[in-house]
Length: 222
Image (cartoon, rainbow, N blue to C red; front, side, top):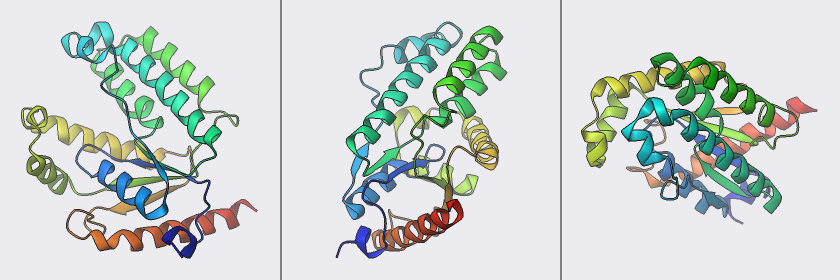
């Protein structure tokens, strides 16, 4: 009996991993997919035609970039459900509007008209009963010091050159976003309690929590 069957997790479930940079979303996605015998869904960055343009001129290309992300994530969400589920997804469609588009609007790198157009489109596409919402969103959380420490440890050049103030802001924005999020059921996991990098064996404890959580959610829906 595999872990999915042991903890009674539906074979058609779709689980999304969310959290700020450095919390270990990709590591969690791969570990859970392997443990549950699910497929993975990762963000496609290499084929994004707006990313380089955006970094050259935030104000000119922020709207185009967010519309592109919205369309791609929407198509991917549909694909997973049309396939029949059984996926672990790295990053959610909800973070784009709740964090990044909102940040551009507040910082003045997306004008008010573009922001309103984007949010109206997002709500028409996503925040409806017809959109296939995930069965569960796992939110990875940790203290700011722990997350900045992880970013430094993995040593990515672009991240090392990013001012610490940016990571502070993103940490705060993510915490504010998740505290008001209601798009689907949320299970919070602290990265110190479930540290896959230093304790790979904790995967089963995570799967057990997921199974218990989904069963409780199913009871509440009846």
